[in-house]
Length: 381
Image (cartoon, rainbow, N blue to C red; front, top):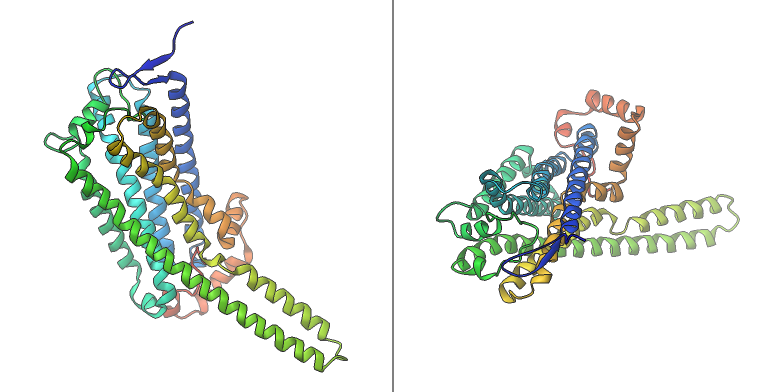
């Protein structure tokens, strides 16, 4: 029987061709999921924009466009490289893949951080948020972040004189194009490139630390709000009990108790739900980036774990690119308004109540209120 395993000449690590074909199929599926998920998010945010805070809608639209374009390009590039023949053009595409992937992940990280920061401001400084956070300023902030990320990732350009050119030349050699199995000795990457590695690593670590800090503050605020609501409902429940005991013969007391039970159940069910979308978005980002960061650190500290790097890089890349389609399911899971609007769009059904509400709003609401509608943000439903 013919052997279908290829051996890397430098490390001696074998990879079954079936494994590569499976990986290519998975990356193509990831690209399809990225397209479907982000298109759904963009359509829902466009058609239901009057239901949410306009600043958050703009931020989530920017995040969806970034994930759609960057995620699809990165996943399709990674898949197509495994199918291309070794030519000068395919080698150039292969060398550009690390920069494209890094740019995709880093810009998502910064935009998620911006979403969390604005969410934090809207809770802790609501008046400042309403006065200062305008749509034009959000656009300027997003463009500035993208330019900053692009400048940071330019260090990964496969151009003569840049620090990683030799490493990418070895990864995309004349015999084989390989971005799935980074099984070359790590000295090729780290030798003479310590400053560049520290620069790229700090570009990831600083926003991650800020994101963690903001999330910790959001969690603390959420716990305080939850405890305060529980105390208020406990006090209200005690007052209701005393009023019911003082008027035992009143026929409406049963209805009052039932109404109070329903209100208490609804408020207890809210709890930390208003912050769930932000936490899940950030948690999924951590889950997608931490394996890649661990493997990067291990490749410098212990370069002899070739089996781990061979298959570990494949899984890490899949998780990292999957971060581009997870946000859509998270919105559907945690936001009732988003889920309802998405179901209306998917079933080609429009809500007469919402259309009439929009018409009344356009007719009767003053211009000042229309500029910043008192609608809930997508992560607070």
